Image (tube, rainbow, N blue to C red; front, side, top):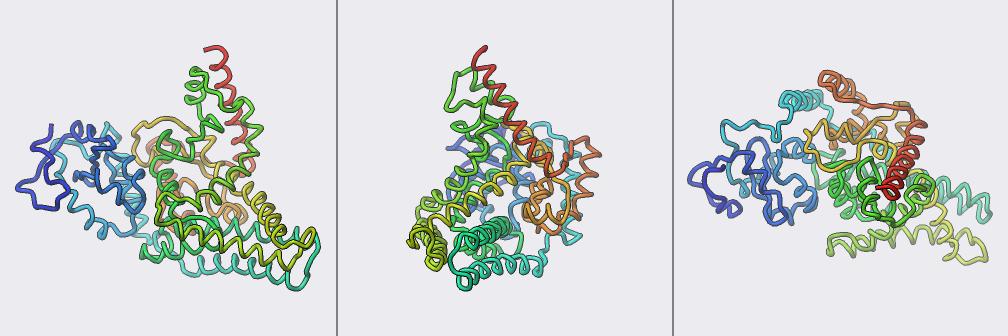
Length: 448
């Protein structure tokens, strides 16, 4: 048990002596109203701070009662600055006899991964190439300008509209990958600059909410494919995923949809995804103070479509109707692109409840890579390097290929599966995984 109480943990007042705790004591404080965590053997009480956490309350709360050292390093690009916020929350440290890792994790694997991260830092792999991101943003803006010029010079016509839809779909998809870079703070050295450009790209090029994206996506990275912690797999009203959830809900006779056909209606998820993950949350993100900004972003993007279609005079000449048709067409095409790429790395992998693995093992169990090629890199926004991205979220994507051999070597050393597959097989595996889970649900629903 810990020596001393927890009094004064968040007051910022100096402690008369260092309090020492066992892992058994730390792990008890994992409730919503009572949260402790450990980074680099130091214990912090985060109960109240969680609600002021810039990355969202849930993402830090998911690490309550655990060693969050690797998660802390993965998400923050300026640990020294963050330490200023942590200092008033300090309540003590682990007792000398306690291991640095909780829950009997493989200490050698954890240490080897931290050594690998240090090697990547020494190789300067966390430094972004300004030219890469400038050219990337440039090719998106070129497509947007090209769309406007087509409207001005070619006027009306369905052929123009179809070509325009393809151009805008491509620019929107690529803008989606680019906002992902800024959202992960992987471009600029200063977090503030990343946040500013992120809001511009996702807000005025995509018409979505940066605040809402951060709230969900950071949870996904902290606990990928973990039920009740990763919002990307909490989709009971639409899908049952993995091997355990279908059986559990089948036994409970839960049936919001015919899940045994989910691999067939998965294609409809594209339409739902484009509406729920972009339009609707943008109008009501988690933080009320962000609502006006989010709405302004959506209106800005919608007006762009209106102006383009005012020139096109589609259908019966109504530019508003043309705007809606153009927007629906682009969303339909882009949502297919978005959903297939974002789901191919995760749905076929392990999806289960919390198992308290170390950072490397938890990320590798939930992610897989797609073979590298120039097209795959561009088409997926380098999400074909999903393993490296999950291990090092703040690493600029153009450096993933450099750290990949080191990650594969570490996985081979410790017997951790490193899965990589062709792009086509990755798409097929999504359907196969959904079909398998649906059949598990049906069998449990009918016979258990």
